[in-house]
Image 1 (cartoon, rainbow, N blue to C red):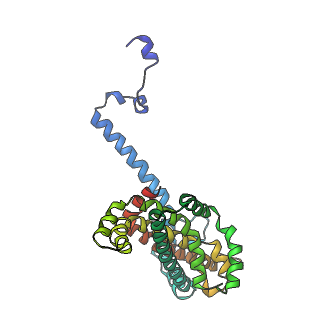
Image 2: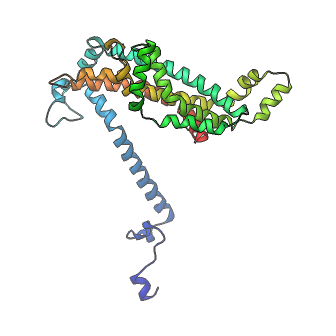
Length: 302
């Protein structure tokens, strides 16, 4: 290497800029790269999980240890731990009622959205009609409206129909939010299902409905499950529309019911964190159980 090359060396990667990097073997360089990448991933996972860890820690701590100037995650004093927050949330608040309302509404939204999106998506993919693509893209356009823009018109219509403060009213409202994208997703998914398979079944004597049930739906199973997870997330986390159309306290869902722990002059941090942690559990279990279908469904739809 000339004197000029020593002053301005050429680096192929940023790793080559590290001191003594060139003296390491390829195995040593690979170990350092993998360890560094894993450390960054572990640090990122900790950052993501920190709110959940904090909520769980607050669930099992007594109230006086939470409302201090410098609260700690870990305490070595057994007196700082207890199940008083959990006992209060489950037996001295309306949280169980709110949980029941959320489960009923979310189950209804998942079923209604999945059935409507599956049938609608299949029809768009298989039935030839004019302006089909324009109609599908127009339906997706309906997904662009924020919930706050739809809440007031829904309140007026729902009041005229007499379905304010009812399960069916909130199920229809949440379905209106989740159905446009779900319909578009299933339309894209059914396009990947070979129609020749259904034609073979129909030539063997199967009806069109039977060929759809026996051929198309099993192949489209990842997309259907992805739609179910999407509908669950939309309904479970929705705040604005339940706030507007579910005005009776007994019909509140979890996202609105958590406000009960925010009193006028104080915040019940322990019960609030406990209720928030319990609220996360169903969503986590639902997504974790069906995660293998989630990416397949959205990959095709995207």
